[in-house]
Amino acid sequence: MKGIAVSSGIAIAQVFKFERPVLTIIRRSSEPVVEIERLQEAIKISSEEIEGIKEKSAEKLSLEEQAIFDAHLALVNDPELYTQVVHKIEVEQINAEYAVEEVANIFIHMFESLEDEYMRARASDIKDVTYRVMAHLCGVRMADISLIDHEVILVAEELTPSDTAQLDKRYIKGFVTEQGGRTSHSAIMARSIEIPAVVGVKEAMNMIEHGEMIILDAIEGNVIIAPSDTEIQEYTKKSIQVEEEKKELVSLIEEETVTLDGVHIELSANIGNPKNMEAVIRNGADGVGLYRTEFLYMDASELPSEEEQYQAYKAVLESIPDKRVVIRTLDIGGDKKLPYLNIPEEMNPFLGHRAVRLCLDRTDIFRTQLRALLRASVHGRLAIMFPMIATLQELRDAKRLLNEEKESLLQEGYSISNTIEVGMMVEIPSAAVMADKFAKEVDFFSIGTNDLIQYAMAADRMSDTVAYLYQPYHPSVLHLIKLTVDGAHKAGIWCGMCGEMAGEWKAVPLLVGLGLDEFSVVASGILPIRKIIRSLNKKECEDIAARALACSSSEEALEVLGG
Ligand code: PEP
Ligand code: MG
Image (cartoon, rainbow, N blue to C red):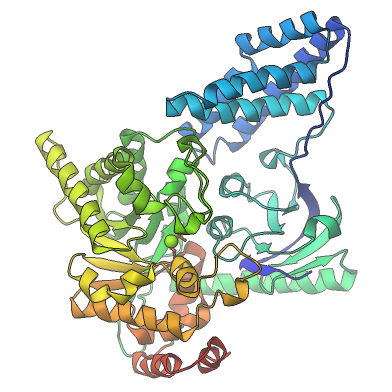
């Protein structure tokens, strides 16, 4: 089967099909003593399972993340819930699963209708926990990713970013999903935890059996079902080769990222979690070019406090104190949801109330984050970056709030670094076209091609059907990149790129030629890109860029880049 390779590597293992079964719960009359006993047993097993998940994920998760499981344990053993279910079973003489569902629904509706955000978020916890208990009562086996303790390749219709965050690299050798694209956030996370992945494999759930052997070729984007012995041998050899190439790159860890004609380029890493810093340092990055802070919000069951955020930002800054760390303010929306914020569904979430738009509306959330960032600034070389800026007014508003928080903190007696850089992502065509104007009001740009391409081509980055229009090398996109870089240089500021295009090997000569000052890529992409840059001549790259810009289609431009 064919799909899109989004996180490179090769895996050979048995399939684990991950699906959340739909429970069919019917009301039956039954003996209360029998049902109460079944209920107690289901609660006991569920409780043990949650305990197990908590222990297993302890080393990967922060204390706060682990606290989610404590909340779930408290819920599964909640006396109030239990008493009400038992009461229903006794009075109505009905089956336990039906009673649990009825009582759970009352609680879920009650919590969902509360004003307080924290309380509303409890509704999803109750859903999760009662689903587990009901699944046991219905005899339905729950597929829990974090419970997997043997080597498998996961096959699923879709994985959410938080599912992906839970994957344990020791056991999950790779994953295949029916949905998703190269820039979906689960693909980005797969690259950051370095798990081979192929997405967009249509019919994968129908065609692949649980437990069967497959080869996942996440270099070419192939899934080979029931491989022959020769295929297994061939791919085992290939995977050894891939490992050897990785070892060769290790010699570049301490080398400078410089072209043959002496042009230095910053090569930074994209991260989504302070824990990624280990890989960033291991791969010899020049800094962090994009810290996607939204994962801090998404992995929690309520808004992270100023203190929690401060600790996370401080940890990242302190881990590479003399190198630049670009921290992006909250970019929620699109495919990144925050269930506890209860943001209304929109027809076109990628064109809607996301990122800085939401922050300028919910200034309470924004101000808390800005305070945490400012306080953390004394622990390293901080650069703050605003996402999804479309107008100068948005940029000015965001900067005004930042300055107001700075003033308050100073008055409260905090120290704040006076060398913080303030920049913006250029990921909306309006900003790229007017880059020269924006450049006068920021210290740097970082081009977000994942969004810039989707907006330039009007092709949803998550859609398979219009994936043919998602063309990084379309000359229109290349011109937007050029406008951005030129606008930056005219104003004397630097311009980086943190979208996935920066990590595409064939794009490197083009981007160097366009004058990009910084590349920010997933940690595992640092050394291969460094190797390429060190083999390039800037003058020759400028020629390549000029030829690509003059093309009329992606196909022509790709030909200029060597296919
Ligand atoms: C981008 O749009 O290119 C980007 C880096 O941001 P995100 O992928 O988080 O939207
Ligand atoms: Mg973006």
